[in-house]
Every structure is written in structure tokens, then in C-alpha cells.
Image 1 (tube, rainbow, N blue to C red):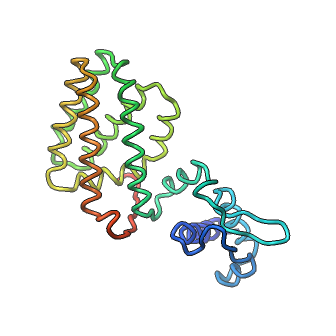
Image 2: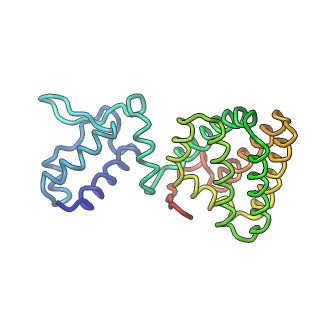
Length: 243
């Protein structure tokens, strides 16, 4: 069996569900109908359907057929991670939700991390800022430095679950930063915010450090939201890992 074939069918069906083509609670096309539509064997469709079921998007009811599940209330974090990791098309609403969730998680992580920062940790953060200044004309390297700084905050929180969630969203994060740092003025502003965060962290001024981090997160989110017109019109954003 061609794994790429059932994977591409799975992705197309998944996108159809998430975009509302197949609403929650509706009966899903049968294996036979899907096999005819895609001109493939039923075993290929069965593989694709198995992935949909594993993701929590469809459910089989005995002697009734397959239905789209109420995935918004039943699906687990595995569904979101799978969407983010594959680097496919993601609706802008999901990106906005991710940015909002990231802010909540990271600000909590920062409050804990600031209590744990050692002089060596502060030196590491200073080096990141120094590298940012030295590469201010290179958006790709700035994105790498930015990721390193925020990942370090998550790591120093000591919360393993927070670290795993942040790591899982890396493809989206790298798209977000790659897009953001292509905007005029964003690199200069971000470096200033990072520098201020590190300075307040070194001074043990936790409220000011958290406030500066919140400012940086809001600045990035608001610029992306404004540029993409999120919540005003629906757009599809292609997520590309490693931008």
C-alpha cells in the first residue's frame, strides 16, 4: 500500500471536517463511496479512516455507520499536535487560538522561571540578545534566537508538560516568527523588548520582567492579527517548518 496515498486522503478529509464541510454529528461518507471518489481500494480508505478515528474526528456507530464526532468537546491535544506537526494548512482561527494560549502558558512559565534564574542563566539570555543585535539584518537567525529565548523560559519553569507543548508547536512557532520578523520594525522592537526583559530579570524585578514579556507577546500577536485580518475574514495560512 502506498502510504503517501492514504496520508493525502486523510489530510484532505481532515481539512474538510475542520473547515465544516462535514459538520459534527453528520454521517460521514462510507468507505465504498470514498473509494469510488478517490479511485482507490477500500483498504486505502480504511487506513485514512483509521487515522481520522484515532485523531478523534470520526466515530463508528454499530449497525449505523461512521459519523463526524463532536471533536471540539471530545478530541484530545493529540489532534492539535498532529495538525501543527504536519505543516499543512491551518485556519487562521487556530493560529490565533494558539497565540493566545501561548501567552497564557508562557507568562505563567516566566513567573516561575524568574525565581529560578541563576547568574549563568542571565548570562545565557544576555548572549542571546547580543546575538540578536549582531544579526539584526538576518530574520532567519533572529527567529532562531527568539525561539531559543522563549524555549529557555519554558525550560527554566521546570514544568515538563509546558515544555512538551511548546516543543510540539515548533512548526507553527517558526512560521509565526518567520512571518513576524519580515515585518518592518519588528526586529528592532523585539530586540528592545528582549533586552529590557533580561535587564529586569537580572535586577530580580519580576513584575517588570513579566510585563515586558507580555508586551513582547502582545506586540507580536497584534501585528500578525492586524496584517492577516484575523477575525475579519477567514484566511488559510500555510505552515512551513524551519522558515
